[in-house]
Image (tube, rainbow over all chains, first blue to last red; front, side, top):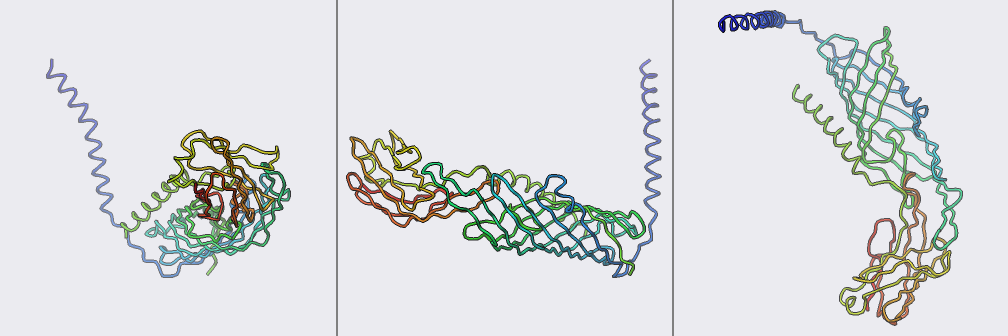
Length: 230
Length: 157
């Protein structure tokens, strides 16, 4: 009786294992096929993009608004040197304090296409950026600063405070063809501040192109991209 | 090249994870506490004469206000300074009705920290005068009073 049970178990296992091994062999046969290596020329086109996420930022309750365009060049389908130019703006009021700033910024860097071996209109890339902005800001509390211990109020208004900031970004992104030479792309960015100049009596709260003046932060871009016809 | 890519991905993940951790360690941005002048007492003499201390600020909103009241191990006191006047007067009341009045002359500058942390008054201490019933002398250790707590004035007995 035991022998019959063992035989049944063996047969069931065999039925399960044999197809798997056959499938594995088929996969091995498939792997043997060598795809022809594509050699890309140095220049493969230029892309220009418009970031739509920054424009719609305030709709989602964000205090900062940016308008940004970018241009990058496809080299060897692997490296994409990038220049990003933008204009950042905020006009925020909180607890009676009004903060205004608007200024241009730029970022330069490179993207590395993870799918460089494939001749595909879609790209998955990692990238790095260096960013800089020189800006001025106004910070005003029209009601002044009230002393709740000794009484009295002192005026508070600093306008035209000048500052500048440098930062680095690491990013991951996707670019997908939607129609002929038009693409949609997004990128997620990790930002790290290198420096931001403080003034004697104020510190900048907002850095155009970077966001809130913190040591690190995250950013998102969602862009409509066009591949130039040359 | 693959190793370089893996390294890059690794760095990215580490940075992202690090950012999450660092964001937790970011200075807490809440309503800023008021900048106060920190008084410390000369350690050599403090145990002999000071087992209790009351500090009274004069000319406050409610008249004279007790701002510090300590009954044991007195070694320091925090004194808020006026936003609008350039001189703040406080009375240090020691044991057995021994009082000393201190006049602190200061320059006031409102300072914007951030939208979340708000505005804080920073001071530069120009001069300190005092009576000498218990206090022997006063020295300004650090004339700058801001939100970073540090010893500003030392009292010698």
